[in-house]
Figure 1 (tube, helix red, strand yellow):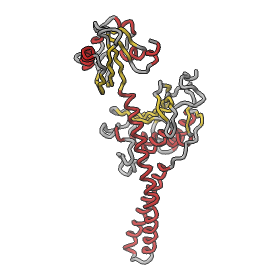
Figure 2 (cartoon, rainbow, N blue to C red):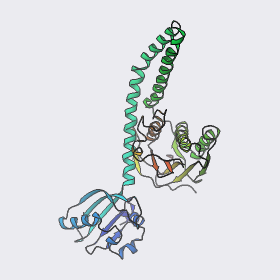
Figure 3 (tube, rainbow, N blue to C red):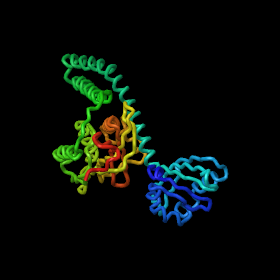
Figure 4 (tube, rainbow, N blue to C red):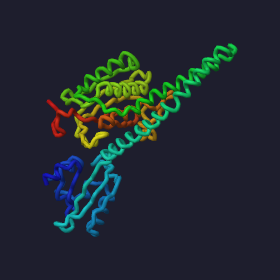
Length: 360
C-alpha cells in the first residue's frame, strides 16, 4: 500500500458490496475525506448520482476486463467544480467482485497537452522565420532602394507614395527581425536564480513606463528555492506578460496587476533536446483584473499570429511559450470574468533534488 500512496493520482479499491476498501493519500485529497471515513460509506455516496463511473465498475465486474474512459465529469457540490477526469478501472483478481479505480485529473493531462502544443507551435514559427529571413529580406532591400531612387525624381505630390513604400518595407523587415528570434536554437545558458530579484526588476521597468498608472502588488513566498533559468530570458518573459496585463487593464481606475510566487507539487516533463525529466514545482503568476480573455481564444493564445490587439503581431506570447518550453517549463492562461492569470511552472535549481521541500 505504501507504493500506491506514492502514486500522484487518486487510487481507490471498491469491494463487492460497493464500499471503499482502500484509498491512497491522493484519493483522500480528491474526495476531501480520510480513508477511514471513506471506508464507512459506499462509493456511490461520494460521486454524482447516475455517474458513468458506477456503470464502468459494474461493467468491469461482469467482464473481468480493464476499461479506460476519458473526460468523465465528476463535478458535484461535494467534489467541487471542474472535476474532469480520465478513468482506469480494473478487476482485482485476488478479491472477487472488487475493482480498482485510478483517476487522472484532466488539469494535469491538459498541461502536458498544452506544453506539447506550444512547443510544436514554436517549431513551426522557427521554420517560417528561417524562410522569411532568407527569402524575403533581400527582395525587400531592393524594393526599398528602388523607392528611394524614385523619390528624388518624382513630383512632390507623388513622394508620399514612395515614402509609404519605404515605411511599409521597414515595417515588414522589423516583423521578420522579430520572428528571427524563434530560429535561435542555441542551448539556453541557465543558472540558479532568485525569481524575486527578476520580478523586482520587471516591476521597476513597468512602474517607470507602460504600467506607471497601474497598481502593482506582490504576494511572494519568501522561502522559494532558486529557479534554474536564464535571467535575461526570464526578464523578457515577465515584461511581456506584465505589459499584456497593463494593456488589458487599460485606464480603469481600479486597475491592478498582482505578481505571485508559490511552491507547488510539480509534474514531471521532459526538457527539450534532452532525455532528462524534471519536476516543475515553482509557480510564478501574473494576475490582472482586466476584461478577461474570450473563451474561444484561450486554447490558441500561445499560437503565433493570434492577437486581440489592433496593431499586434501575435508573436509576443508565442515567444513566451518558446522561452519557457526551452527551459523545460509550462506557461498557461486562466481567465474567468474580470480575472486573468498567466501561470508559469518551472524547474528548481539542479542543486536541489526533485524531492527536496522548499527552504524555510
